[in-house]
Length: 566
Image (cartoon, rainbow, N blue to C red; front, side, top):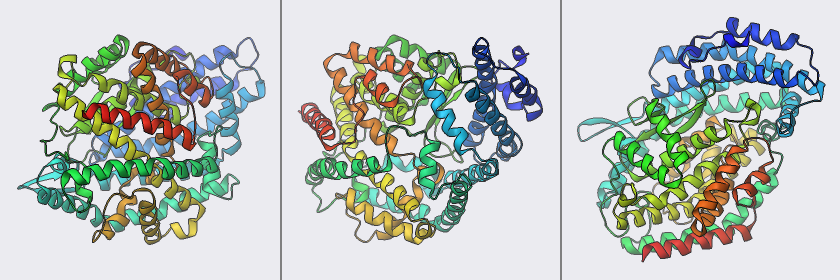
């Protein structure tokens, strides 16, 4: 029967609940025993792959063009008519498997996650999740429609990014204010969505028997290996160790620019007055040079990327009505990843592609595991896959190694990225600390004006080097432009933990690239079969929150900044 499931990815987009239902009924009616549980999991995997790909392709369709009413309608129909029934049927199968108390080797972590999923599942939360997804779509539509007129043309805010690198400070300020003003114009619309997000999330937590959303979310994310208090300890360690290092780096920037202070429009320009890095003109060049770099890192990784190019699994260019940001998703039925981003010809596009390619490589490596529940570890390690690739691949940015730049510009790009790493940890702490405050104080934080004030307070705590004098309204509005806060609550500390792991992996690669890349690939291939600390250890890193580990990584970064700057 299960041979009848589609093997063509596009075909999955036409699947409805009526076509899925017989397969779920077949699984539900089976009598499980130790001698047939492997077959049960194999069939469940095949069905789950098709369901996952259906949702994935419909999601991609609505993000590549947020103005496509048909794509939005098809996605919403899936959310309303298929997703609830899939969740209910999946809950029955999870309960069935847990009752059997038998599973193959390497299934211990998936079983642990299933137990938590079964524990917090509530049927009444399904329609609330559907509404949450619809609000996320509305957020994308608002952001995707943000355009301004520049030099007689309508352009997206993303398309203004290259101008932030202009040596002309007056021009940078003008374009920054133009973009920030456009974002501010949607303040009330996004604030209205925020209140709805908060109401839905608090109700979901209450339905599942939790006093607060954070406790509910911790179980949703299967965070077995750390607590909210660990996150707060991480914030304090960042404030103690990284913020001063970022401040030192920023002070060098300010001195080189010759300005009295650093304003928001001073953070992307080259402090030595060199013209902006221009890595590519066309997306095809971005793809071809990235391929050469990945082949240099590891021929197998390079071949994975070439598959994606050949099969049209990259949507890289920015355009009007395209959702903001970048992501890598997976089409499980055809066992392929898909990368979405918004390239406009700046170096950050190269970094983004290396980042998302790391996720794609993770999919290829873990995709060999037999059961779908074994393939996706915690996001904390998924981001190690992506952030490590940014750092490891940067060695090959030089044009004579297949990359984008002269030796001087390649060094400059690496220094820029390492300085960004120093600034990122405090930014991550800001976003994560804000989210803890939001859900510790739900009555206060339901009102956007209170969020404005808390965001400004935390910004001044963690990001000490930017002068916001006269720009306080824009500073307060910063949380509204961070899509993770709205669409994926509590998804951000993962980036900070992962960067700590990734810098350790990179440090190993500086000593012995071949061994470090081999360890990296071994860890990716483990998927979801071992714990988070074990994944980090396999990759050659330590899963940590403490100031001492941060201090070692910060010193490594600062040493390499100094060496590359010579």
